[in-house]
Image 1 (spheres, each protein chain N blue to C red):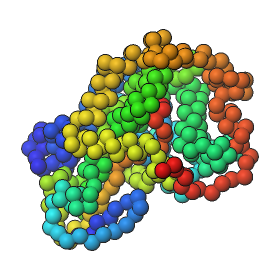
Image 2 (image 1 turned 135 degrees about the vertical axis):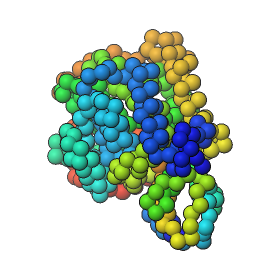
Image 3 (image 1 turned 180 degrees about the horizontal axis):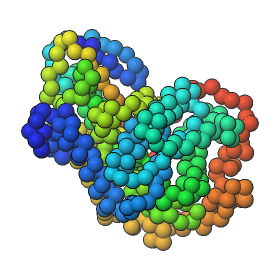
Image 4 (image 1 turned 120 degrees about the horizontal axis):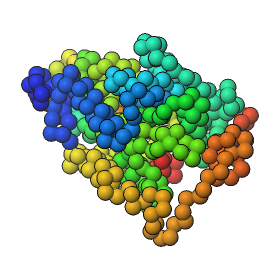
Length: 318
Length: 69
């Protein structure tokens, strides 16, 4: 295979673009896709300060690297989730990436700051670990972005993530979630602006970007996510993509271009679904909340100080 | 060739030479879900993998949060 641009030897084939690229032109392709996502969806303006949610995985480290290459001042935030060796290795990758490039990495550790970790929270609440994990990360990222005066918070959600979430939300007609599934969510109501600059890249492409840039990342899968529904959706979508390249992109961007507004707040909802609740403020931390305490402070109340639970793969319903 | 697979981590011995596409078919893997790295270098689907090559098949699917976002 030859590179579409220079006709040199290709290192990667991208069936969805009917294109092959050499290393240099693949990296340029990644830059162009991120630049275009930022521009098309008005994610960031020149000179704005960005906080990148960093997990130590391929997407967040590729995102941090790409934003820097494109000229944005970006700090990182790593949340220690306490998922045994997996978290230890992930944290090391994040720290090494930042240190090697003299970037600022802010760290928050659930165990030392809030006296719980994800395995313990999952056991105490009897919910899937991904629920406590996602809730904690969203709360702490929002808080850090607002406290630090950042203009926006950037996450490493890629095209596969967005297509899989859309697929799941459509299967269950989660209309309130569908209305918010955009590449950029504006600031307001106590939340920072949230942007997803990798939305035009698949996760195969972000992984290839890291390999070609020499970025070491956490390759192992989170032991607590094994077998979850979201991963199942990705497998289904990848099988469709294999048979018909471009399916994931058409599915997601077709939704963003032609359907998301139908589910926006205030739009008539199918089935008479009630309008989203007006958010008050958490009496403990001041975050947006639907009741006296926000969901994160309620989690801290339940899991904080509980006997630590060892890491174990979650039991799934078959 | 030695083939390293992950999640769970394991090694296979596969007779070469063989194309990347053929190896993935033989292992019943979707190329959308993996990268193939031969002796440390990323390779495309039509690359020929030598019998003495050291291959890593690196999964790229990750993610934990549920369908709602």
